[in-house]
Length: 282
Image (cartoon, rainbow, N blue to C red; front, side):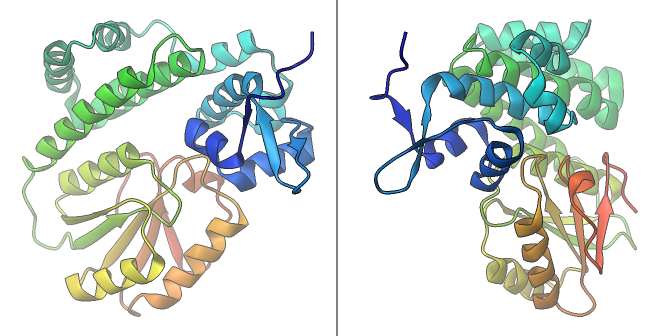
C-alpha cells in the first residue's frame, strides 16, 4: 500500500504540530535517517502525515531527557514507556479532569495538590508530569487540541495568580523573564517566573518569541539586574547559542544573562551566560 502523496506537510506544519524546530528535524533526518522527506520540484521538503505522529512521540521522549539516538531507534510502545509517568495518582486524577474538560475539577485538584506539596514539589511532581501525560496522549491522538489548549489556559491562569501571592524581598534583585525568537513555550516560562517570585525577586514577565533587540531594550528601561531566558528541550543547538551570545552583547554590562528550562542542560556553555536548573535559583 503506497503512502498518500496528496497529504503532505511543510516544515512549518511539522514545527507547529510538534514544537520541534526546523533545525532539529533536519539534524534528525541527516544524522538518524528519520524523518525521510519528500523533495518537491522546488527543492522544499514535505513530510507524510503518518510520520507526524511518530515525530510527536519522539519530541515528547526527548523532552523527558532521552537521547535522540535512542529515541529514533525505539518503537512506539517503547517511546510511550519513556514518556508516561508511572503510578502517579495525582496526575491520573488531573488527566481524567482534562479528558472531561472539567475546568472546575482541574482547578480544585491543582489547589489541593499545591496545599499538599508546596509550590516546588507541586511543579515537579504534578504540573510537569501532567504536561508529559497530556503530551503523549496528544501525540497518540487520544486527545484533541481542545484538551491541550484548555489545560494550558487553566494552568497559565493558575500559575499567574499563584505568583502574585509571593512578596518581594530586599536584596533579591529584579529579573526579566522571556524566551528567544522562535521559542513559543509559555508554560515553562511561567513556571520559572513562579520560582523567581517565590525566591523573592521582583519579576517582570516579557513573554515568548521576542526579538533580541526588544529584550535588550526592555532590560535597559526596566533596569533589571538579570535576564532569565527559558529554553524548552527542543530549542537548543548552535543557532540558540549564537542568539544568546548576541543578546549578552546587547545587554548592559551590569545585567546578567541566565538560561533555564529543560533545554538549558542540553545547550553548550556560552561564556558569560549562567544557568539555573530544576527551579534552583541563586
